[in-house]
Amino acid sequence: MNLIARLLDLLSPFSVETVIRRHERDVARLQRVADNRRAAAEAEASAAHAALQAARDHADEATRAERIADRMKALVD
Image 1 (cartoon, rainbow, N blue to C red):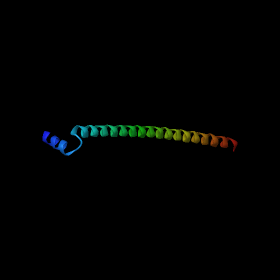
Image 2: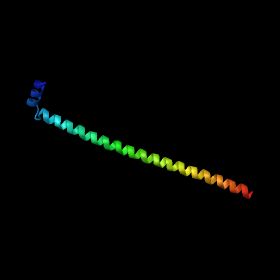
Image 3: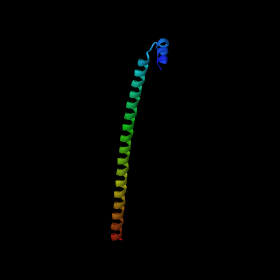
Image 4: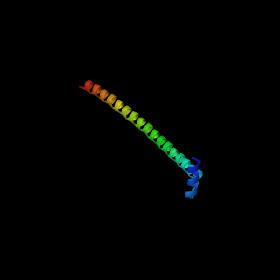
């Protein structure tokens, strides 16, 4: 491994440590991006679940209102 590192040092203007540090920094940046996107996706999923629950609640209220209207109509008839 030392021989490979030494050859890379001689052939490249960048040292092995510099390349490794850059790689680690890139990996850390990509991890932050992935974490941010995961958090955004979870927030959107949570909002979608809340909207779905609200829609179900409205549908339930509409069904109850229809039943009440049907009973009122039956009383009038």
